[in-house]
Image 1: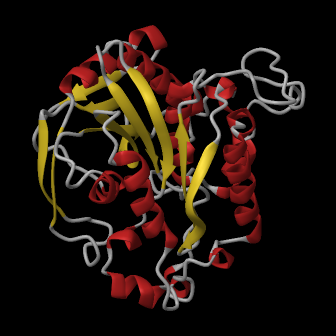
Image 2: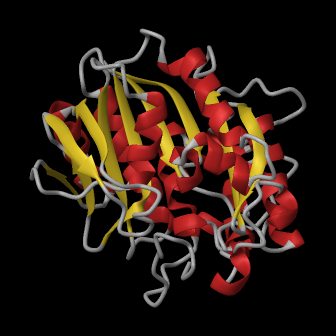
Length: 336
C-alpha cells in the first residue's frame, strides 16, 4: 500500500531561476528568501531517502475537459518559457516519471465522479511551475520520480477536491509507493500593470498588490501553520476576492488528497512571505503527522463532523458551492 508522506504549498516564481546577481539587483541588494527557503527544504526533506515519487499539482497547466496526469517513463529536454523567455531559456531537465502511479490515479476517477486521463505523449509541454521547483528540489537526485497533474479550467473547487481524493486512492493502490505532493503556485495573484511593475520588483511584502490581499495571505499562512486547513477551505469564497493563482486549485487538489477540512497537519515555513510583482508568495511544508493527516488531537478543538469544529461551524462552506458555468480558472489568476 502506498502513502503520502509529505506535502507542500510552494512558490515557483521566475525570479528563483534568474542569476544570483540579477536576483539581488531586483531585490535592493538582498537575496530573496524564496531561494534560500528552497535550498533548506531540499536539505531537510528532498535529500532524504524516505520517498520515491513527487507529484506536482501545477497551477500553470490548465486543461479543459478532464484532469491530465503525466504518465511518461521519463521526461527530458530543454525548457523555454513562452511567458518569460528572457529569464527561463533552454533550461535542461531530465527525470523519471511514474506510469504505474499515473494509471492508478486515473483508475479512481469514476469512483470520485471526475475525469482523469494519463498521457505519455513525448511532446506534451512542461511548465515552469514544475520545472523551476524540480531544478531546486529534484535535479541531482536521479532516482526520484516526478509526475505532474494540471488544474482543470472548467472545474470548480469541488472538482479539484475530487481530483485530490482520487490521487490519494491512487497512491494507496500503488504498492510500496511513498509520495511527496507539491501544490505549486501562489497565494493572492494580481500583477502590477506593465508601466508600474518595475517599481514593485522587490520581494518586500509592502509591494503585494493591495494591503487587503497581503492581510488575506498572512491570515491563511497563520492558519496553515496551525494546521487549520478547515478554515482555509471554509473561507474560499472570501479568499477568491484576492484572485489566488488558478483559483487556488493547486492547493485544493492537495487538500483533497490529505482529507480536506479534516486535515490537521501544521505547516512549517521556509523563507519569508514575499512579493513577486504584486503577487503573494510563500513556501509551506506539511509533514504527515504521526497519527495521520486527519488526526483529531488538536488542543482545544472539537471536531463536529466533516472536518468542522465548534469554533467555526457557522463559517461559510466555500468549496461546496454550486458550479458557476461562467467561472473558469485562469492559470495565472487574473480571471479567477
